[in-house]
Length: 407
Image (tube, rainbow, N blue to C red; front, side, top):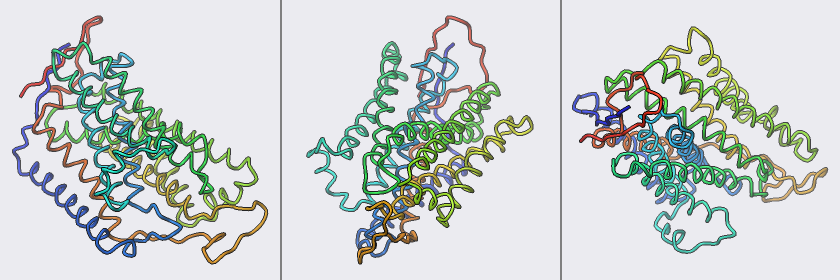
């Protein structure tokens, strides 16, 4: 089976309108970052208790989704599912776009992005943050190499090796991202060994949801009809990932409920947490998990493109809700210093912290999402990341898949 990759023409008013809108939102996000950098922390909703705000929610979601977006390429090269081979270049492109955008939001939100060179040249190998700097840069390098072996005919024999290396590295990357929270004991909801594997499962769900959204949009606007069989395979895969992510969330909360010292935290998150409780039950579990499963499994909606798009958007919304609860809700709840006793101080010990994200925080986060769109839309026009055909093609047993990029 021969696969020919071609660029999108990108000459219509709709294309330039989309690109211009995405670029404008990205520019507004950069302006918001400059505003917060110039005026300081006081213009955000963050405080001494909640030091990671809404931009971190966007950034971590994008970084986690980057790992999962590469799963389609891994299915082809690592697990031998040749039907996914035509989509492997798009998978690698989306993984890079999500990672770059997530890290951009992260650096702009942390403050002093000019000191990035220090983080890149001075490592404290006892710090999980230092590990992640290595993991992020290594992932980017491996994905670039993987794309090169896929799209350069002379390098095709090395594609499976590069794909395997990228697959192993992305597992390490997502484990490292989850371990940022799992290794911290300064917040009651953190410090759990489940965080690493749970973030791996989250990445599979979020990444495939974003990939499906981009694929459906590109096939529609690029006039390359997506085959029903390929679409059904991706939908079934997403169903498995959504259900597995919900299972890990259930195990996490049941584990916390088993320990008496975590009873207050679970009561806060599941019953008395106000916005966080609403986001968990309504945002993450109902809209982000249960409803997408119904839409993707019901015979009347599972094959409908609009319903699949709706389900994918709900999964992304549920993922953002999960990150908001994990990052901000966990900071809002006070650390239990002395189990069985109540601690009070002028610093706010024992008090649930209030947080309301400011407009610049929203704009920076949305700018990160738009940055993903800018990278993908430009790359699809300038380079051949999409196959010439997306419809179902018969595959003869034993035949190799050759990928050719046409410029």
